[in-house]
Length: 378
Ligand code: SF4
Image 1: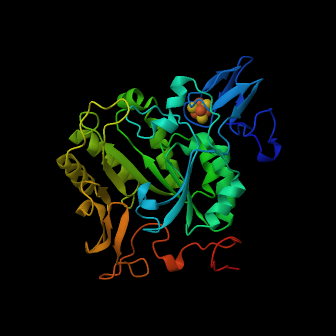
Image 2: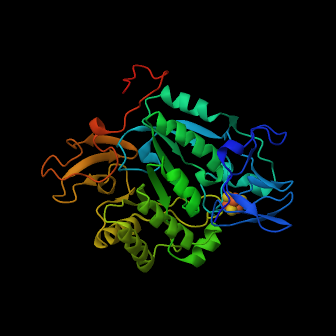
Image 3: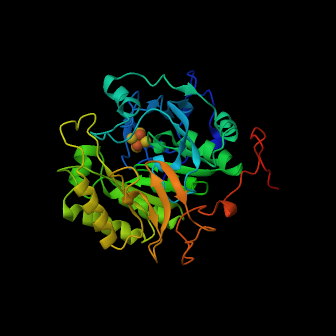
């Protein structure tokens, strides 16, 4: 059981460094160590030391986060980019990230903002300062219907993400996570009240590979996915198909079977791997592997399996689960045609699974003074 630090007790300037906050989830382990139980690494951290994510540090017997409000990415982007295909297709999300990660994926394509500074020992003194209020105000000035936390791991900037999520959710925005699924149960339960949608990376089904390539165990990711479903969060799963690493028939079938156990309605994105960072020696995923992965997902009974073999290819579209009519046509991150009628197939009337798939019945922005031409709902 975690000893959560109540938000009200957190002093903004508890130590004399701007944008440093006391961490929410940690406890004293013994005379020497603090235990951080925000993520499944459960780091034991002695005085002056940092956790595996390198953004949480034990300073004089208290754990602090050094990335609160330090924004390294803030942009409006299509939700398809996360990727999320079953939340309000084609909509824009204000997407936020701060530095750092609790995984060390050898092929990370955001390594410059996620892990590089950890290796050089550089302090986390970069990023543009933005308060949660400023993020929500900015969201109100855009045509976004959601605020997303992605590009780096939202768990490690939990305090910041949680405050933004509460305020943005109250203002009528949906809250989206692009996550590696390593958050522990209690913080997940806490944020679940305002977390609507998550895309979770399930990068392999081998614990050995997960530890070697990601630097983390597999089981907590599986547990997190199960908990998210139980908490009513809409979940989509992404697997990069990596040649020689996770592309065997058996492993893809194991992943597909697990996703099917979560629910037939859970979308599975089997995406192309592009060599990057320390996995530069592996080739780009062949189209045939992605095609086979999609077939495996369909054979497992999943209703929606997506691939990015080619922009506009059949693996990017959404089909009716009953009559197989094409419902949503995509070209890369763009929605080219949305044929849904009130969130249903125009031919047989079957509803498509997802969140706010019918914009007319979607969650509405309730109060945004800055929103141009906003319709206020009372
Ligand atoms: S959030 Fe960071 S410090 Fe806490 S357990 Fe995870 S890696 Fe360790």
